[in-house]
Image (cartoon, rainbow, N blue to C red):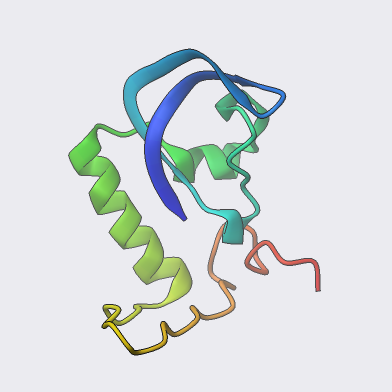
Amino acid sequence: MVLRRQPARIVEGRVQGGYTDAWELVCCDCGDHPDLDHRDVSPELKRVRGPYPFAAGVAAYGEHVNLCHGRQPAHRPGRPVRDADDGSACVGGNGGRDD
């Protein structure tokens, strides 16, 4: 999952027209893909994506991780990062996986 500046437009996976002042969440575990334009994702993914002002985007990021992926411990150098749960409460239902 990533919080990024919202591109003005994405065509064939490339940003066109620069970026807006808004921020958006892109959660691949929920079935979203960073190469898709905001207009090309489902209404459910649009609710996750935003757009958000920066501070609200940071808060939405934390809320989405906690609700959909389980709370993850902070990464400490020399220790492996634990995988999140299966994302069953997430937008994609199965965490965006095709199993």
